[in-house]
Length: 206
Image 1 (tube, rainbow, N blue to C red):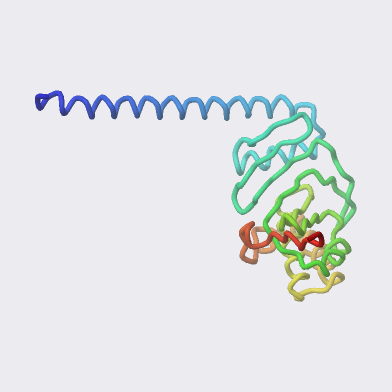
Image 2: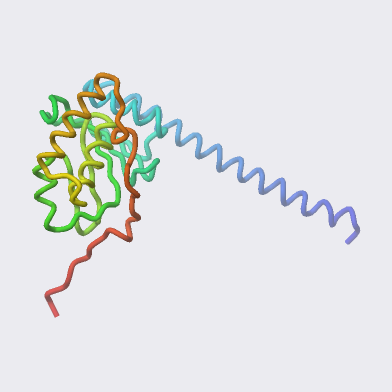
């Protein structure tokens, strides 16, 4: 094999690899565009609160990973394990009247004896012991950050349920007035990994 052929073969292989990579990237972009168009078509008939939440998430985290007529879902975006926006609006009056449409989930270990405390604090917190996750459902990401930061305070004995509820109301009121508390801007604790928070429990059957 002469020298010129030995040079041309690797170059040809490189061009083929680049062409395949370009095709894969184009397919990925095409799928993203299709999901984006599907999202826009679906949102056209959604209630205003759901539509606002969906647009907020898309503007920050991009197009959803899954789209149906009733929800949009994103996986592993930012600090979140999962984000879901629902078409269905759930009326929630704490700390003020709003619609729960945006659910955001992190890996979080809730001790079994604290489930009732979190439920008393905020009925829109959803804890799953086996899966090791904690979700907050509200109308904005800022309020979900706030709910989960305060939930962490309760679990770690830095606030009672009543204290956390009062703090939620005050920080939310300040937020509406343009004052952004750190609890509304991101997590004030280290978010765990899923394998650190799961609880498979014990078998009682031999």
